[in-house]
Length: 132
Image (tube, rainbow, N blue to C red; front, side, top):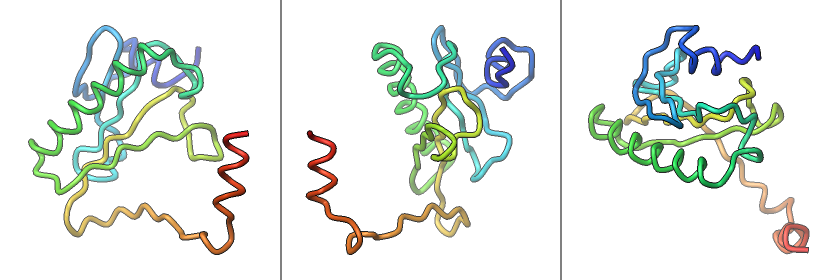
């Protein structure tokens, strides 16, 4: 398999390990969108969140919570973003399931922008499509 995260997990490529157990690896992201930006991934290869089994996902999210608290406290962050992208259209660039823990600081320059489309979209229509 030519997955860069699998190579990191198998220690073929060096990384800065924040946390590791039998199921999960967390490393510092090379890009450091903000100070302490961390990637958390299952050791087993799953392309995205649709593929992972519930037990592994539950463990993964518990590790993410633990690390988010630790990173916020140790790095004196003002807040935390936890992001997961699934598929190219959503911004996934490495096709191995992973979550970003991005510490946020007052006046950091990272922009995550949500645009209000409530005048263009019928919530009732969306709800009907999801639930039927």
